[in-house]
Image (cartoon, rainbow, N blue to C red):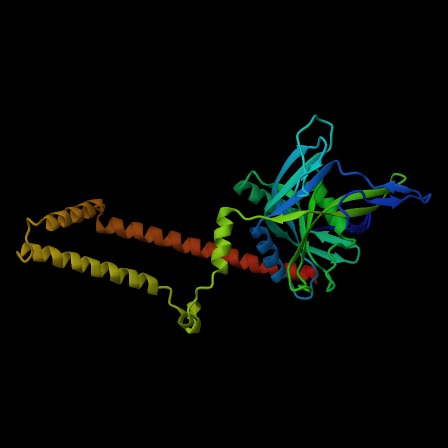
Amino acid sequence: MSSNSTLSAPALLLAEEEGSSSLNTNGESSSSSSITNVVSQVIVHPLVLMSILDHHSRRAEDSGRVVGTLLGMKHTTTISGSSNDSNGETSTSTSTSGQPTSTIVEITNSFAVPHAERGEEVAFGTNYNKEMLNLHLLANKKESVVGWYATTSAADGTVIVDTSSLVHEFYAGECDDGNPIHLAVDTTLIQDSLSIRAFQSAPVQVQGEPLANLFHEVRLHLQSSDAEAICLAQMAKTNTTTAEAEAPMVDVTKTDPKVGLVVSMEKLLQVLEQASAYVDSVLDGKIPMDAPQTIQTGRHMADALATVPRIRPHVFDKLFNDSLQDLLMVTYLSNITKTQLVIAEKLNETLTV
C-alpha cells in the first residue's frame, strides 16, 4: 500500500447543499469555489449496500472505518435555467456549451480497498485499487469510477473526518471528471436504522491558498433493477414452516463428497434395469409389440442409444482419466486461491492494526 502523509486541507461538513459561504481574512464573506458540474441526485443500488456491509462485517477487530471504490455511470445535462416542478424537484434541460452541468450519478457496483489511518496519515492500497478496477472493467466496460465509500469511524456516528480530504483527493484523480461522490454509511445503528448519505466536495480557498474541503450533501435515492427486486423479495420472504424451522441442521462439512456421485450412479443403474426389463417383456410377448405406446417407447430408446458414442474400453478409460485429472487440477487451483485469500486477509489485518 502506498502512503500519503500530507494533509492538505481539513474536511468540513455543511448541512446545506448549495450557496455556502466563508469569511476571508478581512472578515468579509466570500463564496467557496463553485462546482461547475453539479450533482443533482445520487442513485444507489442494493448490491452496493450489501457489498459495503459485507466489507464492514469482515473488517479486523478494533479497526476503524472501511473504505472502497464506487463504480457506476454518470448521466449529465447542461443547465439552462433550472425550474421547480410541482413536486419541488429541480428540472434541467440541455443548453449551449459553456454553462454549468447537472449530473445524476448511478452507483451500481463497488469493491473494498485496504487502507490504514494513523492520525493525519493515510496508507491506501493504490495498486490493489488499480488491479481490481481493471478486473471489473473486463466484466463491465460501461462502468467507471464515480467515487468512494466509507463507514463511520466513531461511536457517535461521525461521517466526515479530516482524513476524508486525502481519500477524496485521490479519487478525484481516479474519476474522469475529477468530481467524485463520497458515500457515507452509518454502521453504528444509533437510531436503529441504516443511515446512508452522499456528499460532493468543493475546495475553500483564501487568497488562492486551499483552506478546507467543504462536503455538500447531495440528494440520494435507492433504486433496484428488476433482478435485484426479485432477489430482495426472495430474501425478505418468510415462508419457512414450523417443521422446517425446528428441523435439525445437517453439517454439510461432515458429508462424504462421494455420496452425491454414488446416488447418481445408483439412479442411473435403476433406470437401465427398468429399461432392460421393459425390453425383455416386449420380446417375451408380455407387452404387445405393435401397440402404439410400445412403438413410441422403442423409438425413444433407439434415439437414446444412437447418441451414445461407440468408444473402445481403453479409449474410454483414457478420456475418463484425463477428465478426472482436469477436475483434480481445478480443485487444486481453487484450494490455492482460498489459501491466498486467507493470507491476504491476515496481512490486511496486520497492516491495519
